[in-house]
Amino acid sequence: MSKTTWQKKNDFVKEYLKDFNPTRAARDVGCINPREDGIKFLSDEYVSKKIKSAISKIVVRNESNKEAVLHKMLRIANADLGEFYNLDAVEWEDFGGQKHSNDILRLKPKDETDTFLIKKISYGKYGPQIELHSKEWALEMLSKYFGLTPNKIDLDGELKIKTSFTDLVKQISEA
Image (cartoon, rainbow, N blue to C red; front, side, top):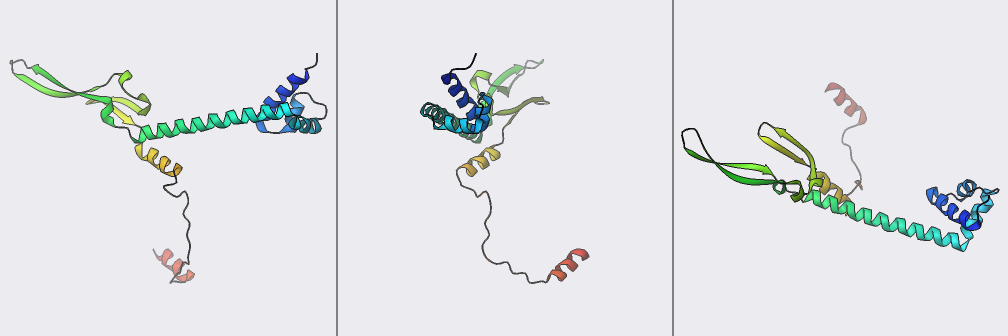
């Protein structure tokens, strides 16, 4: 049973979107002359509209992914360790009946904190320890994205060396 023309066109679109190779896509949907048929498919109005529609959806999805990543980076850059602890005053009596008061750090419940910001939680000698994702790294990535720091350094001008190459080699070997 052979595929209908519409099925073949839809299958071609799916295959074409994998790597944008019309010959391979035509071959994979069962065309006898994939090179010519791939070009025919691309010039077909229905196929062209389906491809444009799919590409625009991919672009929109990528833009929203980019926004989500930027939002997460901003959350990391603005994270405050104080968001994860409560400082509670605890009163207690010793065996002699004397009252004492201490401040105790307690972790906030999970539903009250942004756990995405936490890199690691461990328990040490003095209780829970929280390590957040690196603010410096997040700020560096954000500044690169917004063009606030150069990705490469451009050097213009001349470099004048006052010593000769042989003198330089001599100085290095003596060191």
